[in-house]
Image 1 (tube, one colour):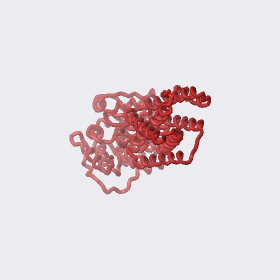
Image 2: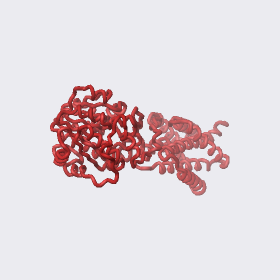
Image 3: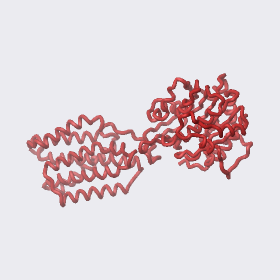
Image 4: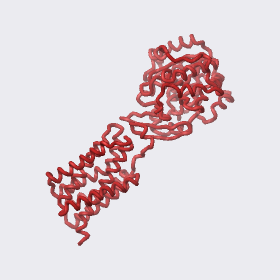
Length: 485
């Protein structure tokens, strides 16, 4: 008999503990996306107290209405974390969903407590239960505890309705038990949270450390941004503004472009563009970052953009020492495309040296052409000029290009040709039309724009060249007008 009298307190306490656990889980999302938001904590507290006061003072509900309100609170509490997380990439409603749940919780609990004889004691018990539920959830990293509280609450509610012969309530809670069992895998499968989220406002949907870089992918309203070492490498909004200039001008300048060597480019986007040229017979791909390569080959975030180019039968990807391969291989290429990350350290700096470009020159056919990405001509002007000097010192005729990539800023490339002087190189580049290619942005007008540079207030001596023994590009790059934070 005593257990029956205690049942209402148990039920209210379970609902309160459930609410405390859900609210804490929501606060975890606040900290995850915003680091901290004390103003939301104060607003949430105010909304909760105000909802509870209005319910206590002015609102009256019959028993069936209270059961329905509690059921709605329970359902929303079970799905609110996943809704808040998944919808965040499209619209920031984390605060709104949390306010709604806290309001429902206050209405549900206070409406139940109004029926208790000792309201003050019941309020103290409920408050303690909320704190205990939140405390337990703070040690956990899943929704299992929340699901267990909800399941126990619904089962006890079902037993109570059976004892009281409350048919409608019995059907409601019986249905909720079935629903809980069906939804357990979905409710319990918490979204993966990434520790690098604190570095970004947009939602991080993927993060991985590789031997060369940290790869982070963020998403907002269906578009993705791909960061390497915290620097935006490309975005689905405008990646063609980088990869079309990287590939198509150099392919058009080659007298023929049947055999192509791509060094780096492990995300598969440069290869995707090369495959648009029907005359290409073989693409040899020297992998720099194995982890990025496997990611770009298998992860849908990458394959949706690179169109599974890494699986194309014309592509021969291999991981080996790039310097050794260039030095020892007897293969001759019509085009060499160097898509290596910026020289943020000395290891990457070696792919911007005279020794490296001389090996590229050796690997090219008589009319061969090479291109390398060269950073920003405006934010790292000295580094850009030094790369140009270095390509020129490696027997190439040089052509500089740049383009405004919306999500990255101004970016530059250096083209090196074997059998054209600089005047011929500029003339032939200006004549490129790309009419037979399926490009998103690049045309003859764009080509003219990319070859036009204004004045620069920063210059280095033409004799300054980047070598393995004197790695100056790295220092020029890191001392540029960049913001790495």
